[in-house]
Image: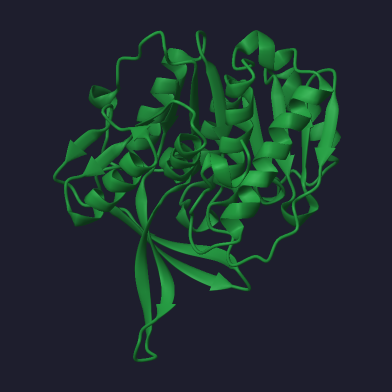
Amino acid sequence: MILCCGEALIDMLPRETTLGEKGFAPYAGGAIFNTAIALGRLGIPTSFFTGLADDMMGEILRDTLKASNVDFSLCAITPRPSTVAFVKLVNGQATYAFYDEGTAGRMITADDLPTLGDDCEALHFGAISLIPSPCGETYEALLDREADNRVISLDPNIRPGFIRNKDAHMARIKRMAAKSDILKFSDEDLDWFGLQGNHDDLAAHWLKHGAKLVVITKGAEGATGYTASHKVSVPSERVTVVDTVGAGDTFDAGVLASLKRHDRLTKAKVAALDEAGIRDALELGARAAAVTVSRAGANPPFAHEIGF
């Protein structure tokens, strides 16, 4: 089982009403939530941990998890409100305005941390859930607790508009990255970190500091995966892009699903990946992400849609 740990929220996507007025429509979302439902739809045993509201928006999230075969029994269900993100789309590229004060997801603490069984092979973290208190500290504590015994995957998925203290967030990401086995950065993430150098050198830095697989995605230019012994690049699949909401999250799910399906989801096996294993993971990520960007919102494919 893969446990996805992080935010679930409602994306309010711009839509035109039947009267021709501008409006917004609610879609289940959140980076880690998107990865969880993408994994579930690919047939991978998946659980989700966050704080979920018992309000109408929370019901949308729970119904989506259930329909995508994701277990949410580890979630803390609370009377606090759901996080909402209003989305602006320009040429299919999304920017966000988050409303998160006092929400169910933000207010989880160490008291809410789940007890994990032996069936949990990997944990996936990232995105805005690592920024505010107390949830940021809570997820970091969970990673610290489990890092020695299970595969840790981290995608910082930087959202600059949500970060109030860049130095503090950068420090947290660096601490968590140092204990992670799989790291995924987009080129936009690297720009935010001030790391505009050669990608090979940047990957080598993280591999030297403990990572076993580093993946750098470059949007339409594809992705490159690195281990201590190999470097593999794959192109993006060419599709008509509706919007990019959830693309990177779905890519993460494809990588993890490939590793799980081929019995490669242990620390030793990730470190020992050969070129074929890296390529399998990147290509599945690219294939799944291509479906997501071809339709509105974060709507990852089911296994039959990509022949998985």
